[in-house]
Length: 225
Ligand SMILES: Nc1ncnc2c1ncn2[C@@H]1O[C@H](COP(=O)(O)OP(=O)(O)OP(=O)(O)O)[C@@H](O)[C@H]1O
Ligand SMILES: [Mg+2]
Image 1 (spheres, rainbow, N blue to C red):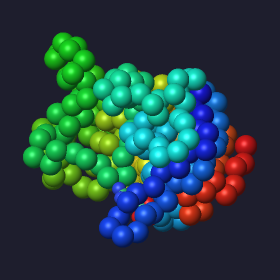
Image 2: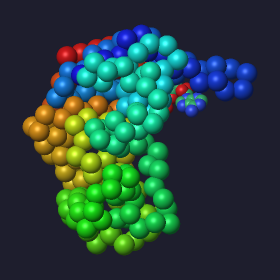
Image 3: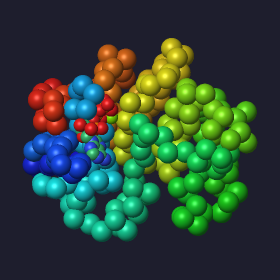
């Protein structure tokens, strides 16, 4: 369902080009849980943003259910993201001065669903992630672990069938980590396709990964299924 063929991404920085992702080809079937590992700077975030259609590759193609999303205009890619994908970003991109609930439901606003529906959906997710008492708190006031939980909740607001998570275990204490593990198992049971970038793959063993991909300097160095 997610297929990459010869995908490369090069960042131009001043006088030096950085090849963040280099000729990666891989297929991830629908419903699989994939862990993407590798050292800092090995290209995990970049590869995930390419899979999610947020970045466009400089070479190669990215297919979602056979559709080449690497060639679509941003307008259409953003619609696909809004309808189908949930993304837990490593950089969390909250509006610091807006309350928790607004940050949570922001991506639903362009869908023109009734506001009461949107608020109810938001409330249910806040409850699920133990944030109901923070509903009206400004995002900038949350602790690291609370922000991480909100980032996970936000990725689920549109009930996505593809979920990308970039270092979701950062800042989580033992209890919340167990909650995340149960959450991931629940995604699997419901047939969601999940890709998780992490440099702590051992923390997520209990979630039962199907595929392990290891990046080294942008290249796919190992693929275990
Ligand atoms: N927007 C950008 N502009 C320039 N260089 C970038 C950009 N994004 C990433 N890079 C570079 O690309 C390489 C891969 O970065 P990436 O963030 O994908 O790594 P990562 O595996 O996610 O690292 P980490 O474990 O630290 O999250 C790094 O050398 C990084 O400096
Ligand atoms: Mg990263």
